[in-house]
Image 1: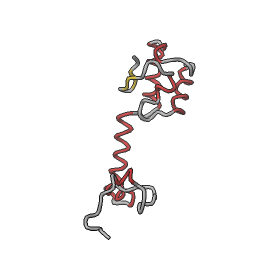
Image 2: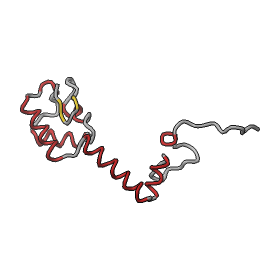
Image 3: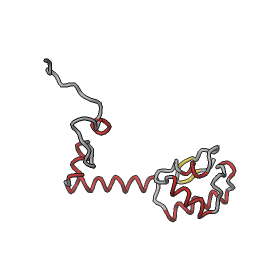
Image 4: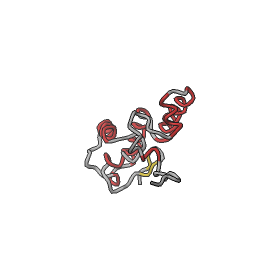
Length: 122
């Protein structure tokens, strides 16, 4: 089992797909990393040699911000917006959609489950 950036990669998946299990690496970055290291896209994780795993790990460490560092930077950016009391920061603080979506209806992902209003009878 390959362990890269603190994440155990699934052994029976292709390298490109398995790398996307790391927070901060999507399909495009996974393809870039595989091309840089020189690994065929059809190779499974279980077929990787130890040297290839080390090369992938080094390529990720040098060129990409992943997992804990990325999460920390994202949360610090949100905290900065909240401290500035910008509009986006206030939306984050109130748990409402940040990017201009409507809230009269919808927005249930951010607002949570609908709460019934007491005493609203016909």
